[in-house]
Amino acid sequence: MKKIAIILSGCGVYDGSEIHESVLTLLAIEQQGASYRCFAPNINQHHVINHLTGAVSEDETRNVLIESARIARGDIEDITELYHEEFDALIFPGGFGAAKNLCGFALDAENYQINAEVLAAAQHFIKADKPLGFMCIAPAMIPLIYGEDVQATIGKDRDIAESLIKRGLAHVDCEVGDIIVDGKRKLVSTPAYMLATSLVEAASGINKLVKKVIALS
Image 1 (cartoon, helix red, strand yellow):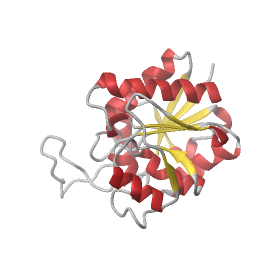
Image 2: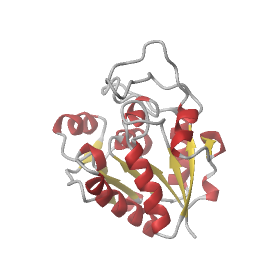
Image 3: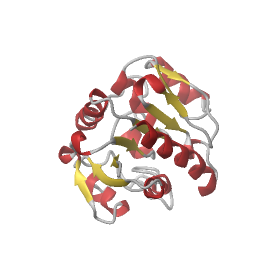
Image 4: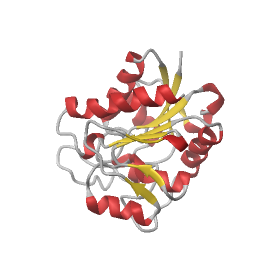
């Protein structure tokens, strides 16, 4: 049975992991006959968003690991406990947490950095020649993880794509139900809710991503 590591970034599309993407990913992994374990950095979120109003909760602080545990039903570990030797692949669901907590793309698209623990975890998988999957806005981390001229997608948003191209990403436009594969690097990406307007649309690309990542492992 293939074992897949999942890195989450909180709980909720505006300040953490996109919940639908995360759950669809976990479901797709099990449907492919594989297993998963969830991880997250033990850090504070950049900020907390009221998902009903869209407003920033100025007087509230939340922890990425604790919030991610909501999605994982409590079965989650600190990213410092993620050992690539125990897994066949690594997948990052999207949501603004990937661009606010795991890296700073949503805060400063020109000069953003990536969390050091996230970077180290991803690069351990890469050095071990194991595949990685990124969905939604999570590919913003790819140039900082892999370097320049890596093929990936965030869909068809031209402004966001241009920002990532400036950081070295070889962006490829992609429909919601498709994936982009950089075969040389065993890297798979899909737009998910960068384009999806329903669970069915989001699942179409996510299912393909999970199946391809497992096939490459």
